[in-house]
Image (cartoon, rainbow, N blue to C red; front, side, top):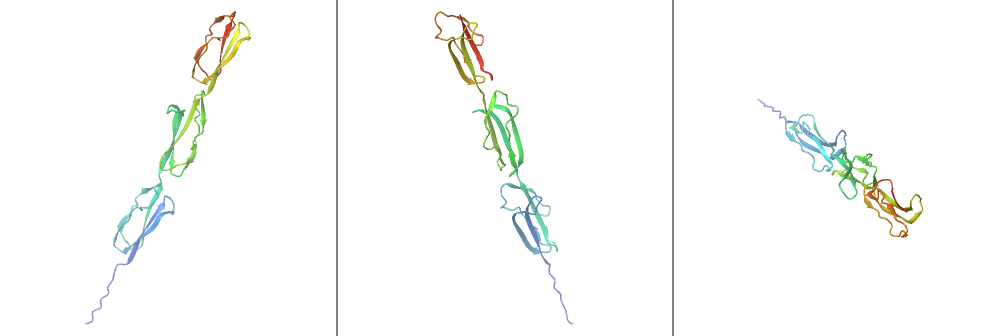
Length: 219
């Protein structure tokens, strides 16, 4: 009696692993091929060479399993990380706010644009737009600071003959910025035959956006 034996083996198969940018078939890391036979167990892992600005969206449901006759395809999707821009509006040389902060959110490599605040008190002026007022978002949050300063202003002091605009002493201009305190005095070179009528009510005070005019009258 002749005995004939047929031997069978499990078929060769494989698992193909992709590392794609979310929503695309753009590879962020080389494909990985895991070779084996039907019914072999397989395990896949996240790629270790993905640029740091990307994060894994989620682990695929079939990241591990059992090989089948048909090739198993495992796809890891990655997306750019969330990040943002913090915009501050500060008084020059301080962290004193002249307007509330603004936060811009996005993802790494997004472009951003910031603007000066629209509700800053009129007594302030923007020094200059910051160098990073516009740009591209990075992994680290970007800080943009707009600095404002009080506007320049002045006090003009006249020394007039009473009831006229005839000067008895040269005008004096006191330069400063809005909210600066100022003090004025009677002129020291008035001819001795004249006397001060009275001190003006605004001889001292706080500078304003509009120039303050202080007039001393003499008789």
